[in-house]
Image (cartoon, rainbow, N blue to C red; front, top):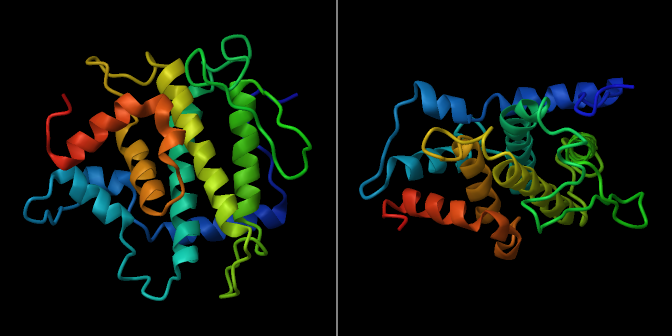
Length: 235
C-alpha cells in the first residue's frame, strides 16, 4: 500500500480540471510573488504586512469579469495549494500514525472527518485526515456542478461546502502549530508558515468563511498576527 502521506490518485477528468484551475490561479499573486521581487504600493498609515495581504486578496485587474463565487474558487484553490506545499508536504516524514494517531490541535482539541457519503464522523490519524481532506477538496473544486466554470449559477450547497473546506484548512494549520511546533518554528519560536497562514486567515475572515469560535486553538498566534498587521505591539 502507499505510505500514509502519498498524494491521492486522480482520475483523468479530475486531473484535467485541476490543471485548468491551476492555470487560472497562475494569474493570481502568490505569497512567493509578494515576498520576493514585487514592489509594494503601501498606502498611508498601512503596514507592509497589511499591504501584502491587501494585494493578495484583491481581484486582479486582468480578471475584471470574475464573479464573487468564481473568485472564491480561485482563491481557495491557491490557498489550498499553499497549505499542501508549506505544511502537508513538510509533515510527510514527521506526522506518522504512531506520533499522531488522531487529528488534533494540542492535547485536548480533536477533529473527526465526515463527508456526504458517511453517516457518522470518524477519527483518523492526522496524516490520513489531511490526505482524505485534500482528495475531497480537489474533487469538489473540480466538480463542475458544485463549482461551475461556464458562467452557470452556483448551487445553494456551494457556500456550506466552502465553509467546511476552509474550516479544514484551519485544522491543518492548527495541527502543525500545536503538535509540530519544533518543525514549524524559527529560532525565536515564531510560526514560520506565517504568511501562507495569514493569507488564509484574512481571506477566510474577509469572505465570512470562518467563525471566530473555530479559531480558538490558534488564538495566541492570531492575536500576534492581527497586532502585526495593524502595526501595534502584540503585548
